[in-house]
Image (tube, rainbow, N blue to C red; front, side):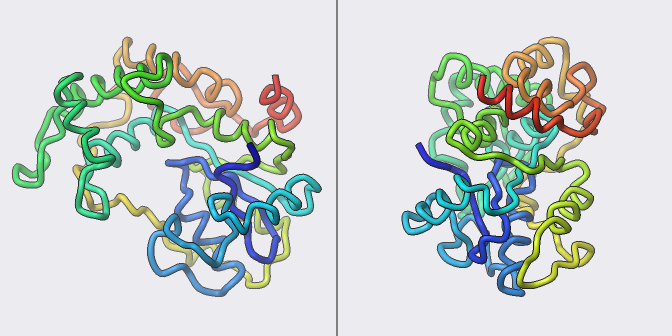
Length: 272
């Protein structure tokens, strides 16, 4: 199976396991800059040079050799599961993608027909009942994760533990798991542990949020979107994410993790 979702600097200074909706655009740009002294012009997910990526066939043996020997510092980044699934809804379901279309073509029309999701339109200013539509989307996300219907789960709302776990299951080992909610502190720890060809001043790095401005703004506090049923669905889908990464499963308003990840425990649990 190898190391899907793994990126590595061309200098092999650092290895990063991508987790969608967890600052991956910004992290990829930082890694690109740390080798080349410039950010990639465009969405870093579209780059085909400047970074080793598992999706690039020529990069696979280089990544494999490095990860198997643990020659470089390896890390990943996670996010509060309540906020991650909410972000996925506003970005991938309610938002217009950078190509000017809806995500995955017929996905939104199917959600409208089968789950009663309403996402408004540019013509009406994306006016819709955000809370009701999000809760209906949660039912769909649960169906994809638990029953793999009406489709397999999308990478943007499949559990973080699944993404993170493939790296360990195939022979990798993490040196750090950082949190989106404490992003600058986490990236400072990563960069402080490695030697990069180009120094990175994190205070001058912009956030590369490719979805920003392409859809509706969230109109309510995070906790307003989660009633008892919604919290039950989130727990059902992401109970391992809460347990592994230390987020508060009982309080959607608490965005911060309770403490650092126990790396030995994490590796043991991911290989259970």
